[in-house]
Image (tube, helix red, strand yellow):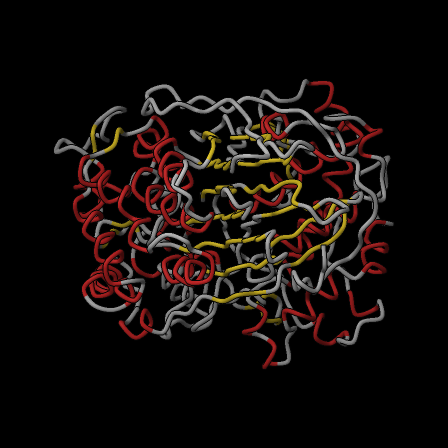
Length: 606
């Protein structure tokens, strides 16, 4: 594949391919969920067009599948999938939030990424989340209400992608979600469980009226929940285009909800009208002969993931063995180093470069510079965890940006709770979408407008604008996009052909979930489903975590002997993944920790 056609600006290496084979079955819908079947056959035929989708809810996967069956593009299916996810999985994503999309078209040999991240309103200041005493706000106090709401980006991002890659009419992609909102869907176990565990949701009138019964109890599993307001929003967007979301009655409802809520957010109609999605060059790097591509900042996921893999490439992960003490120790140490850099340098860097800071290009070039990564890898001791890990200084390794720019920043102070959703789609012409989408915390800001949950993405900014007298790269600023951990990926083999795609929800642990999945497929030879199922081991917030029940005590004690103070607890990833097998069929994976499924089939005769 031509790196120029894909516009890959940051490729750090290519080598040899070691392809894995095999397949696994799709995951059945969760108990109590709608009985939409999960297809368990991977399709391949030289004479027929086949498609694939993996998404976090059976309703959403089926909506995307219906679009694909009739010959719609991967972007068409992404619109349908997102529209339904916003209805049936409102705790994780929706039209009131943002997303990052990777799109690959094998016919034009072109890889593109779309940034639909929310932005801070023009009224935002660096001290947005400070109390009167200058201390950072309590996280939940900051979340619930208008202060945390960023200008939603996913609708205009989807419209931009559709203008370039859609094959069906824009309106057609919203019809299934609109009908489902009118006729109702069954409340799933996951939705019911989260309604029981989010105490302030019922205190805000719109959400309380919608998600709870008159006695204050969450709607039970199987309850038919209807959302006519959301159906109307979808029909307006379908008929009048994305601008109808950012202007007119829908925009007015969003602004009213944000500014009349507790902790009003100061959003204006002009903030909405001026929102623009951004196309960015992907970040890519080689790992054991595969080429891994992901998102550039303001997502920190792509650079941090590629750093982890580059550090691991110095060690024999295959020889160490899946889930071994040695392998997990190396994964932890690589993650610590990469997250330290992430915490210091990665943000919406384009908003910093005019003030003497690091541009996005400089950050990517510095953090993925091979000599710098070699120096960081030399800090990993296979026998023992480092006592402390600090951010590196890429300016010492033959790049143009001087040390002053790198040393001007202080450490970030972002709470970053887990939520979000991910889906992977391949259409009948081989076009691929890997998209991670979010409202940030469970049920976002807890505000609703026009039938939608509104995000709380602004709490992804650092609550402290400076540390020890130095500015924080991820501080709040008007028009700025908060740093994200979302890590959609696509993977190519040595011939330049699509080999895999994946992504996950999970806050800052997203990066670790995706790294584990790729290591499991590439180094440990697992199928997509086996890799998704494999127990999680992540190091997202300064402490190593093992998935409870996933590893025996011997592994935990061995890691402790190497200096890791491991904690075992639930790590609720939601990875969705696929591999392309040598015969062209799909090897799918849907995370059993949530309610996702994967479906595959053939395009119906036109």
